[in-house]
Amino acid sequence: QELKMQQRLGGMATRPRSSFFDLQAHLHVRNKLHPAHIKKRSCRLDYRSACKAEGTTCASSVEALNAQLLYEEQPPHAPHFIGPIKIMEMPGKGRGIVASADLKPGALLLAVPPVAYLHELDAPRPSGEELVDEIINKGLWERSWMQSLYDGSYEGTSVPSLEMPSAAGGSSASSVGVLDEESSPSTERAASSGRASTSNPEATSKQSGLSREDKARIAKMTKFNCFGDNREDDALCAVSGRPSAGHIGIWGPFAMLNHSCAPNTMNYVVDTAKQGIMIVRAAKAIAQGEEVTISYMGRPQLQPVGPRQVKLLSDYGFECDCQRCLQEQALEEKLGDLYEGLWDEVSERRRPEFDEACLKFAETGDEEDLRALHEHLQASMNQLMGTLQKARVSPTARLAILGSMFELFELKMDAELALDLTEEFVYTLGTATKAVQAVSPGSDLAVSLASVLIVTQARLHGANSPQVAQAKALSDEALLARYGPIKDDALRSQLRKANLTMYN
Image (cartoon, rainbow, N blue to C red; front, side, top):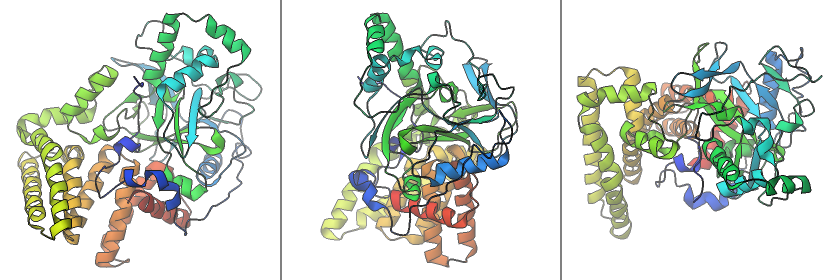
């Protein structure tokens, strides 16, 4: 059975399945959808030469690295960047990563090559079994990061250092640094390859000495620490002029990050020059000493606390006690059965009803069932909002609840599009965009929703209207969290249009 893996919210499993965001229908021709106005750009900025002091990072070097990751189709060197973070023992969690300085939204925290990595251009990601075979066949299990990874037991695990080695081979005094390919330790750089795995004689000899228990431990390490996705960030690929790659791998520092259902970072892999660089950015302000978190879930992150807890316990063996989960659990008494009951109703009953109503409308032109369904969804939404207001739920907790009800927002938007209820659609879309950005800041879904909101508001109220300005503010917030500071207005516009084109 294929190994389960951590998936970012922007992964294929997280994007909506409905007619509003029909990804599956376009998956096989995604690269043919690149809009003509997006041109391949080249920005030959050398981030290494911008770093003034060995083992430290200045602002200009980070800006140059951002430019390399955003613009270049084939950067000459694999970046190895670790921001102001450190690994610590976390009470009740084992190891984790905390901020060693105050961090602003968009701050680059990791840009690191993999320890083990497989990719396939314009194809779904390789399987977990293939990655295990790659690790065993090439002897990658002996690398120091692999030896420090969690394998289902805390016995023998240690707290690895994020200290960056200097170009001279010594240890830098700072955990903040930019390394080029030559100064990055060769024992920590994975050979990037496609599905075909070739072993060398030395690795084959070592493999023959592996016991069944050793191989089982390697499989467990892979299960608990790998990350994979069927696509890269398609908008970023379009802007940089390169094809997208399905990928799976292990990134040592990234594997130290713990889960939150409302993470304060976002992450994705950039397969530039087939190097599989893992990017992690602060998606919101992070205070010094605060834990840095990611989401282990994909689409289920947009479910109520009950289903989320069931999935995390089943897939990863723990119950989440993040702030979002605690907030929702504390509100269960006030919300009663409305909260999760409404989610069950929408996901299990109303979606099939919508599909049947759409089929009837397409065949006969009769929209009566569609209108009745929309009225029911509107009444459910009003009931939810009224209950939250009556319970005096804080704005932060309210957005968390609404983020858990995205199934309702999505179905309501689909019905409004089918019935051409543009004003109602815009209102629902605006609320959904804020809710998704609250629980999954910087996700490609948040960026996509904001892009659709800008276009729709412009059609209703004009390009220079206050409504468009508000939509652009939401979009800027999501773009900053996902891509970092963007000073080039043309690039910002390209990324918006690319996200709109790729995901709409």
